[in-house]
Image 1 (cartoon, rainbow, N blue to C red):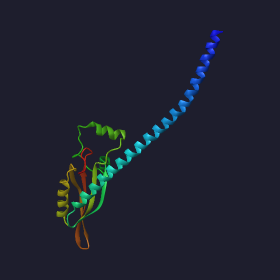
Image 2: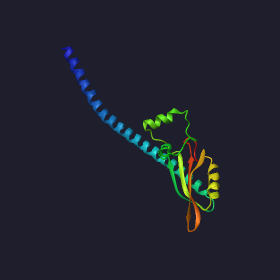
Image 3: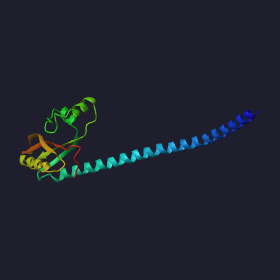
Image 4: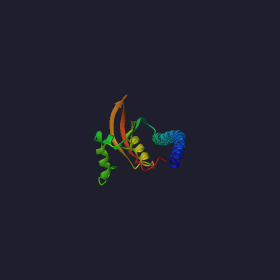
Amino acid sequence: LVEQVRLDSIKNETSKLKSQIAVLQSEVKRVKTMEVKQNRMETIITGIEGLREQQLKATTIVRDLNMAVPEGLWLISIIQKGANDLRSKNIPVIMCDDPARKEKQEERKKGIKQAKEFVEVSGYAMTEQGVVEYMQKLQQISYYETAFLYKTVRSILGGQPIYKFIIYCYMPEKKQAA
């Protein structure tokens, strides 16, 4: 009989604890929901900050490319490209690929997204000297490791010679835009 009373007491206490657990579980569920929302907000904010950094970088790049333009030269396009984009056009990237670094080759094989480390600048110039002058100015921009002339094509427009050019500027990810 004493054991029955004790067993009833334990059952009663267990029942009370289960009801307390049920109340607490709803609170735990609310807290977990709030944590998920907080994590999502942090992810969104981090993404927005990343976009702002990239926008600033792109703005700086375009500004510097335009500021370097000499008289008698105008740009028609500025495009960020990755090393794979250059390889697909059979453009030699020997000056910026390190053959000793196998991890880049592994990344290409695995299909890992490549950084857009190149800027393709194309435009027209009234003289070849204008293209040379522009190249020299681009090589002085601090965040470009190198700039190289890929192609120039001379044509006649309105009886005047005009030079279409394509220049590639190599900007490794590690260096930041000034």
